[in-house]
Length: 49
Image (cartoon, rainbow, N blue to C red; front, side, top):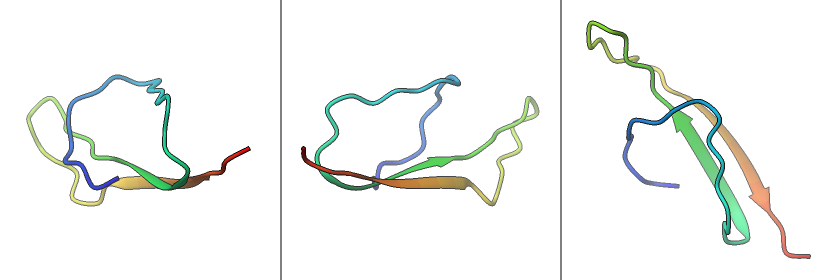
């Protein structure tokens, strides 16, 4: 949602997201430090119940 990239582990969960559209982007970095120039992303919408 507009934040910069930060190191993380597989299996992330996010609690208490506000209703609305959200996007999660992943940028791979290999052991040599090469950064993927085409990050993958997934978007979803949280709705109020």
